[in-house]
Length: 256
Image (cartoon, rainbow, N blue to C red):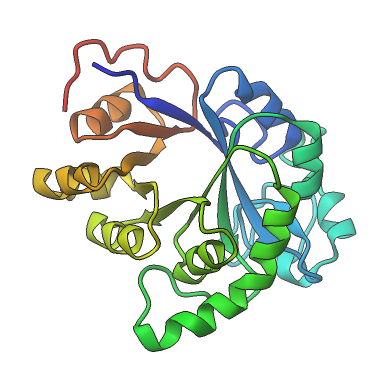
């Protein structure tokens, strides 16, 4: 069995303060790449953070000691927020890049709009969505120039903006059903598809094989146990986006 590629989800969020410089440094030697999330502050500055808010409100988890919606706050306010009482603060993307050298998977979460539609868009909506995403995408790409990067997103506008700026960018649509991921991957010439564990479990073998036949990897999220790692590999996963290190230790003899 070929060992699956391991992506440290938010810098192995199960054992490190997620999406921080310290987490990326700690995870770098235990994974093939480190996955981080990027959102925009009020002025468009890309910061490395997952939730819409710094506090526990409106669906956010309250992982910092500060409050407010990231899209409404200055980068100075956001980057002063401490993550999970760890001593680590929310970094700008530029600071994370300057402070680490790990290969990265950058997930584009939101560009500042309160609501952004996930998944595939009707043809009439695609260009407008790309235009909304383009300013943030341009700033992200400028910050990451020269790094080994894969970009992922649930948002078609983000994928379109990435492809418009860089014809050679390594892209991976995130999806909750593999058919949608396949569609977006074909439209934007993506290198991989990133389905949820439920999505790959629910997909028929032919759909997974079709992704592979198109030359695209299948990297599955979010893996939290060795049993989930085994289930993902059995379903055809090439890579695991995992909250913990060492989850591949017990995969000997597993085949898809």
